[in-house]
Image (tube, rainbow, N blue to C red; front, side, top):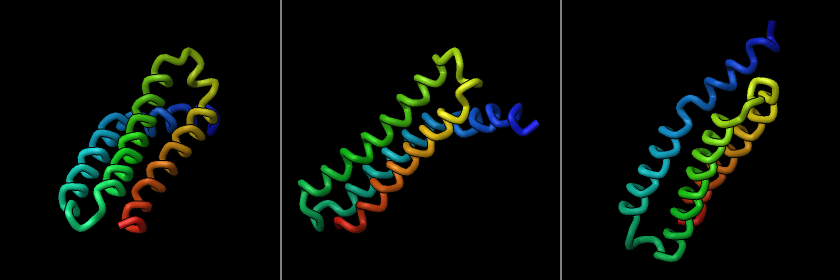
Length: 100
């Protein structure tokens, strides 16, 4: 029973991926505007570029998975890729306060 449910659980991970990626980038822009002037521009733009890259990775993964014919059979692979992309986004966001 657990194996039958796992692909549906992975579906739930990817369902809001595009919206959360867009929201993440939007909030990053707001943070960048808020700290502009107190943080060197080069560092700020570098951080913003990393957050944008992490959002792009998530949107791209979502698109690839949607087009995949074997997504249910490869649910563990897609779950791992989602975890890696979430970890990358977390590193990007946690790097901001360290750099600032």
